[in-house]
Image 1 (cartoon, rainbow over the protein chains, first blue to last red):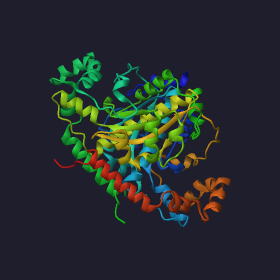
Image 2 (cartoon, helix red, strand yellow):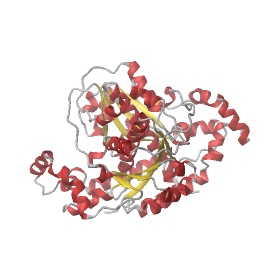
Image 3 (cartoon, each protein chain N blue to C red):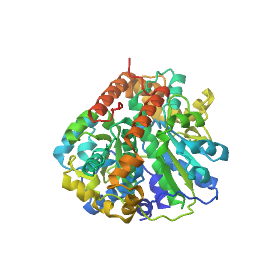
Image 4 (cartoon, helix red, strand yellow):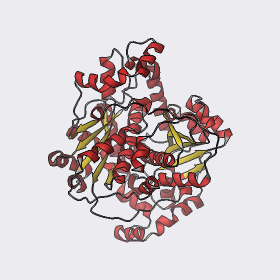
Length: 252
Length: 252
């Protein structure tokens, strides 16, 4: 089944050919994005399609200068957007009330469902994609570069283009590590050992341990990739941007 | 192209046949969920598959007693999950630091990408799905029913089963209302009028205006469906649950 195959064969593509994405295909994958489920059919999200070298150049530092931001023909920024809906309310004698964390979450959900539809549709067309998790870390800068007004928060960024690499499938935890039956079944020490065993035995893991001079793979995550001090700093600045963009008004 | 067709023909299904979902198909669609992109391949999400009448009965009030929660053969709750990863860290001499809003957002992103993969894979198999936005509103109750430990937050719920209805496609805003080129292009009054014109002229809209005795469709959203007082109350209780589940620790 083509759809299942497309989903199962997903790999993140970080190297792209310079070929542009034909306009008709771009329209079709964006249209696919808008067919996603969304909150009350309010569609509280926006998609910003950046293709010019100038704006991609400005976005690059928001994504820690990963080369694919400048190299991919298109960079898509998916945003929670309560601005459009609130403007419509104001023009229609209706008082909007979406400047709070619940609606940031609803906008995030809408943005992510649209994003995944766009990505799967792109992959069905032979395009490659990569999600960039950096968007939330540097949200205040993304807001500046893309000139996001109050009510709009960048959530994730996706690079899109024809693949110039064929990476192997990455590993995943076994299904029993992710899926719970009926209710949440908390993990015993043995469960955790079993769920992570295959990942810990990968040749890639062994190489990372040697390169980083660490005893365990978990330490590479906690000490190198996502250390607590960075998480705290990014988290605090995220809260500041949420305040600035108008998602933290919780008083009457 | 089957994948594009599956995406473009999505409609939310709220009435289901009683036929169970074959175990092999359930496994395949869940597996499809785990192939989604995710944060640093940490897979910080969990999927809870509820099929027993007893637990569905308990979940029903969390979703405002919409009948499909009890009628659908399977109810899937997608959660941001930092518990599994943190437990692994603790068993591997690594100090986790994911008890903050940034990682709630990362977990939300992971959960939503997995959810949309599951939904598209389900639809490719002829199943119908419906997202329930109620999960975040009643998160504290969902936490109790599903016994979610600290580090786990329910984000969205999806009912799954074979469709017993064939609803029409719902409307969407035109692509130019959602997509911005290069940077965010804020909306003029005329833009808003044009973007919402088709929606406002739908027969469905006319019926809603008459039924609700309102002048504008926007007022139905602000006064009936998502009034400010409800948004505030849900938003505050969401923040409380985030504190309780350990996602609001922003001090050193």
